[in-house]
Image 1: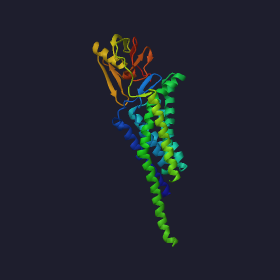
Image 2 (image 1 turned 180 degrees about the vertical axis):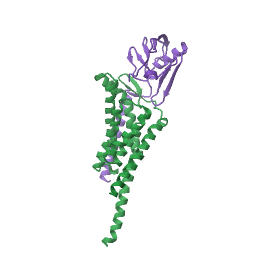
Image 3 (image 1 turned 90 degrees about the vertical axis):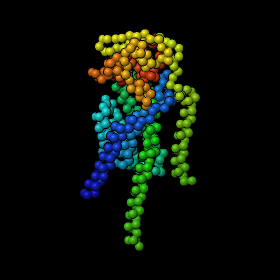
Length: 211
Length: 145
C-alpha cells in the first residue's frame, strides 16, 4: 500500500513538474523565438518564409517526456492540462479539439515505444524517427482540422491548407529534432544509468550472502 | 566496430545525406531561395478599397512601384492621410494590420482582412505581390481564417 502511494506521489510530482514547465514555457518563450531566416519557399506560385516559428516544440517535448517518464492516464493528462491552462489564458478556437488530441497522441506514441522497451540510448535513430513521425502525424491531424473549419471543403481547399502549413511543419520538424537532441536524449541516458546504478547497488548487497 | 553503433550511424547519416540532396535539388529548381519574391520596380496601377463594415467604403486609386498589399496600404495612408497601425512579426516576416483610420480590431469580433481581386488573402500582406490593375480590399469583418 505504501509502495502504491509512493508510486502515485512520484507520478503526480513528475506530472506537476512537466505541467509547470509546459505552461511557463508556452506563456513566456514567445519573446525568445528567433527571427525567421531569409530563406523562402515558393510552391504553387505562393512565396512564404521557409520556417514559421511557433512554440509547438515546447508542448511536443512535454508530451514526449510524459510518454517516457509516466504511465497510464498521466501520459495524456499532462499535455492536455498544459494546453487547457494556456489556452484559457491565450485563447483558442474549435481547433483545440485537434491540438489537444494531437499532443496526447504524441505522448501515447512514446508511451507505446517505452512499453516495448524501445526508448533506449542504443536506439537513438528510433527516438528521432518517432519524433519526426509524431510531428508529421500532429500536423496532418491539426491541419485537417483547419481545413474542416476555415478552408473551402474541397480538394483544392485541402491542398491550399496543407501547402500553407509547410513552413510550420518544417519548423516543427527542425525545432523538435533539436529539442529531442538537447532534452530528451540526456533524460533517456540519465534514466537508463539511474536504473543501472540501482541494479549495481542490489548486486553489492547480494554479494556477501553468496560468499 | 560494434554492429549496433554502425547501424545507428547509418540510420542517422543516410537520412541527412538524402535531405541534403533533396535540399540542393530544391535550391537548384528555385523552390527554395533567399529572395522572398521579385518585386516589380516599374509603376503599376491598383485600386485600394477600405470597407469599414458599417456601409462606409473608401476607394483610392494608386500608382505604385515595388507593390505588395502592405506597401499599397502604407502608400495610401501617406498619400491620403489616414492612420494605419500594425505589428511586425519577425517569426512570420509579415506585418499584421490591427487598425486602419482609427478603426481598431476586436470590436464585435471584427478584424482587418484583405482580399485581392475578390479572393481572400492567404499569405501575409507583405508577401502578396501586386500586378497591374489588381484590386485590393481591406474589410473589417469577422475572421475568415
